[in-house]
Structures are given as structure tokens and as C-alpha cells.
Image (cartoon, rainbow, N blue to C red):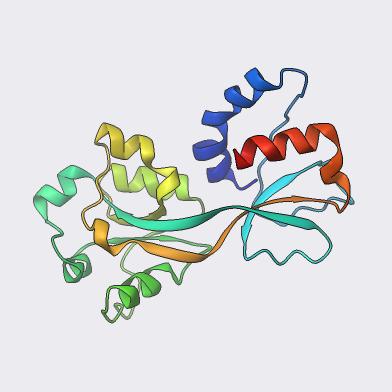
Length: 192
């Protein structure tokens, strides 16, 4: 699975799966590349996309909603009360989704700034830490920042400006393997 998904969403829930299915061992690996089920000893994968994996069985797990987050100290110094206020800030970019800011501004009814105004990060967990430490504003999936929002390390200054992405997270496996007891138990637990 993708590194931030593994760290921020999956790992906090893995103990629950183990309690329910102690007979099933789950080994977790992460990567930013497509899974090669033929070349690697992998039973299932969780990937972000649109569901188009022709050689695999792909089952939709959840959509993705991107939210704007920042540190409370940054917002105290330079408040964000309306979407246009975002232009005055450093915009942290996710390097594999460079179009995210343009999409966010378009959804807010604004023209995006001509050039990126901040550093780019390869993983969402890096963007989250940069935002929490006051480097700038970040656009991140809401499922990855629940703890920071709850403990106040991050705030969502414009909750009405959430962006539902077209893609989502999918459970992947080779056709026919979904009937195997361990894979079926894992799938049912994920969907539950």
C-alpha cells in the first residue's frame, strides 16, 4: 500500500484485525509503484486510483476528500477566513499530485496562482508534518489528519472548501483469490 495510507490509516487499525483474526499474519510493505503480483509474493494490495487495473480484481474501499490544513500558529499570524486568503500563504505541494492546488482553487471559484509558491513533498505524511510545523498550507486527504485535527496540531480553516477527488482506495488481488479464507477475512474486515 502507499506509505502514508499504511502509516496514517492502516497501521492504527491493524491491531483490530489481529484481535479478530489471530490466525492470519499480515506483513505490510509500502511503495509508490504499481504492484506486480506475478513477480512479488503479495496476496493483496491497497492502491489509489480510478479502479482501472485490467489484470486484477479491484474492489472499491473508500473515496478521498482533500482538505486544507495549517498550524494554528500560522493561522493566528495570517488568518484564512475565505478562499482568496489562501493566495497569501506558502502552498505546500504533493509532488505526485501537482494539479491538486489548481483543482482546489477551481472548486473554490478562483483562478489558481501561476506558479507553485512552496516546497513539494513526495508523501502526504511529509506535507502533514510541514504544515503542522508552520511551513505553509497543505491539501491532504482528511483520513490522514484525524489525530492532528483532534489534538489541535492542525486546523481546517475552510471546512466548506473540501474537495472530493475522482479516485479512491481499492483492494487489489489476482482474479479468483478473493475466495481464499485469509483474503476473504481481510476484505470483509476492511469493508466493515
